[in-house]
Amino acid sequence: MRPLSYARPHDAATAVAMVGRNPGAAFLAGGTTEVDLLRIGVHRHDLLVDINELPYREVEELPGGGLRLGALSRMSDVARDQRVMARYPAVSQALLLGASEQLRNMASIGGNLCQRVRCGYFRDGISACNKRDPGTGCAALEGINRGHAVLGTSPHCIATHPSDLAVALVAFDAVVHVIGPGGSRSIAINDFYMLPGDAPEREHPLGRGELIVAVDLPGDVIAARSTYVKIRDRQSYEFALVSVAAALEVSEGVVRDVRLALGGVGTKPWRATIAEEQLMDGPATQEAFERAAAAELSAAEVREHNAFKVPLAQRAIVRVLAGAA
Ligand code: SF4
Image 1 (cartoon, helix red, strand yellow):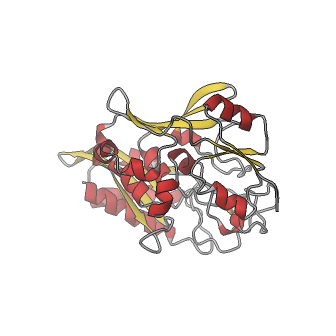
Image 2 (cartoon, helix red, strand yellow):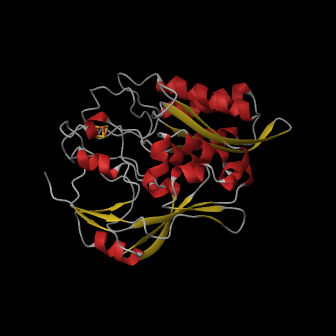
């Protein structure tokens, strides 16, 4: 048994300082990832700094029609917030399709964005895994890789990013706000997630002691017509094989605006910029959707068990766009 200390500071400065000066410390919000990983020995923190008393639980209005999601607001509360449902239905749907009701009641928005990968080799604590133990290799490359990524992979890691919420946030250019020992800063959501490259242990650009306090959803009219579709092996409490967050604006048969992001296929929540560029100002037809989907997946690198994800993702994109059109 390993000793574990616990603290519950009442202000953010103290929480940030406690984690900032202690390499073995971690923030604790809902605990739905952290406690699991501590139990199975993948995380080895010796101090948990409980941040649940900090004032980051609200969903607030932003100028221009956007919304600010407090980092400690719970998934279930945000999913059922009337403003989120009306202005960002894809965000609400992504939240409701993630985890179970019990987990959604506990899990925070900030924690959701920082959740670790579901790769079985990462979580078993003994297999070669560059993400868990840098430099040891990647057992998934030649192992069971049915659930692994086909976009943004590297020879060092092919784990899929597991968050549904993050896919919807990427589609709508959300901004992550953090505070830390060096002050506060904002990070575009697409920059918040890093490709594995040769350092898969580094998943986001947060420094030691930096804490997510809010996520901004910019005012965006097209987001009110968005949708999130998740394809998985069973209908509840399962991670995506493929997911699509999308919004489409069509006028006189021409695509005037489009947002498209993918989950389940990338090592990070995948903004489908190739498909978006190909679709813009073109015809809103089945053929055009099929061409754009094929272009987005053209860089896919498949492994022994996950090649099915390429046609599955293409069909999912076409289905969602055709429905939106
Ligand atoms: Fe580890 Fe990534 Fe390889 Fe999984 S895919 S074993 S997380 S390095």
